[in-house]
Length: 113
Length: 117
Image (cartoon, rainbow over all chains, first blue to last red; front, side):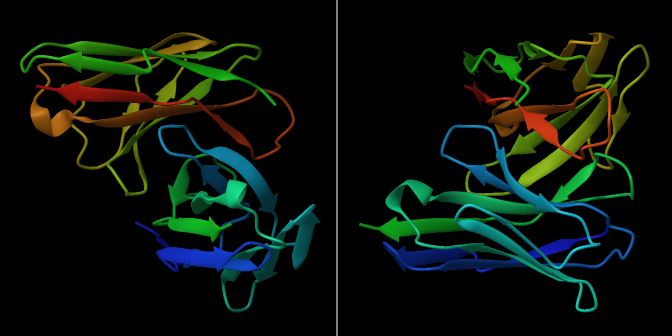
């Protein structure tokens, strides 16, 4: 099965700092790259997503950077806050144009107050 | 955004019993729903794709006779864990996509935590 590799596994950031999470994919047919945020005991919620026809997308403090040639995309959280402490998952469709997603292994982010 | 509701949110059962988990799209219709399983501190693993009015499609390694999926309407899919055993204890999450323009977004339920004693 095609994979989505995510790093780091865990991340500790001071309040106000920048959190960066990276993902690498294999299937060049992937055409939609979402990031999900999950709090303990809850289902994942869509945070931000990008399509490969753009290299960057910004929504508030959250930015996705996309490098098509390297088959990598990353999530940047600016001015990180304690409320951002959660697990973040990148994902990509297993097959182009479908909603059958493959999820990355997850990154547990802790933002210190 | 659209709302997906799961019930129950948590359930404890004895080994050998069957447990049913419901997934409902509250304010939209969903021809396709997905069931995931998540163990503590691990990622979401897709179990099966639930299609309204037809048989579910299971991922490799998922026992279809153990995890029965029914998608009887455009707003309801159910997952039944049959003859549950302690190793089936996990967090089960469903997701659905909204009919209409292709936004790419999946809406997830809040999850159902199953504990088998």
